[in-house]
Length: 367
Ligand code: SF4
Ligand code: SF4
Image 1: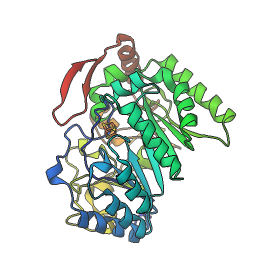
Image 2: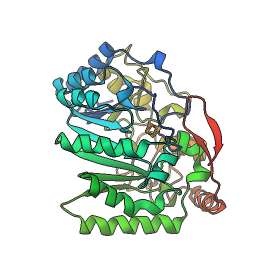
Image 3: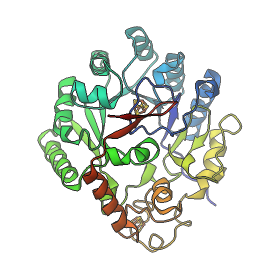
């Protein structure tokens, strides 16, 4: 096999600790506990290895990455390794002192999540009273430091009607970019799918609204959108293609082709404690399992889109088709697609509001 081109970036889940409890959280349902987290020295080595491998940027993520006491030290090391540094944060619990240290360490960009576009929705979906004010204060710290700010809003049935308000919020806070991402149904979001799945007509209305805003706000605000693929014609190229663009590293050091890859049982994930990032990228069984197109079956194998969407998402194929090597059932060419669409519509119509908030000890709460 020829050596793969280098990854563009690396996403490091520095910790799974987080003060919030979002029901759509992309962390695995079985969260890694603080005792297993990599130490400062190992993360520094990982950053240096990522830069040497050719990666351009590092996303400092979690959980809540500022829950790490060494966040400024890690940011400094990543920046001095030559990586563009992006902090992905809830903005809750970041003191001015810590923020100043992170900025001084060389942070390039901050990405701040909002769970709702008003106080009640935000604090309810984040499962944290007072988050709204803390997030707004954090946004002000970012812009007053002169750093570019991206607002990230995960939308689903409880807040999809707020897409317009999210755009207003991003403008008010001085963000340069807004990412409106429909919940992706793996992990926590899969568990909460019945409470999160939006109806098709509301989804299409939200997509139209974003398309219009993109035109009217061109030059003022960049708006990215991830559409809910249960209603799409073709799936998204998950993680830009398995083992193609990025490496995720879990708090304990497991190197993953995407954040949900551990749901695929039987894959062998190498750990950065035992292998260099270059070895993992080139040789690890998990990264090679679905790299390229050789693993594909029909209808993907002979499809003209196979190097556009790379067959969609392996984790979603497993979750919905029971087979990680199947065509993603979000694709209209999948034999399962009609059933998946019908299930999504039925869930949206049933309108359950029973949410399991993300936590180390998951609890079932009637919202
Ligand atoms: S999605 Fe919510 S709960 Fe999950 S890490 Fe982000 S802020 Fe925390
Ligand atoms: S058949 Fe496979 S490659 Fe073709 S569009 Fe669907 S998921 Fe993509």
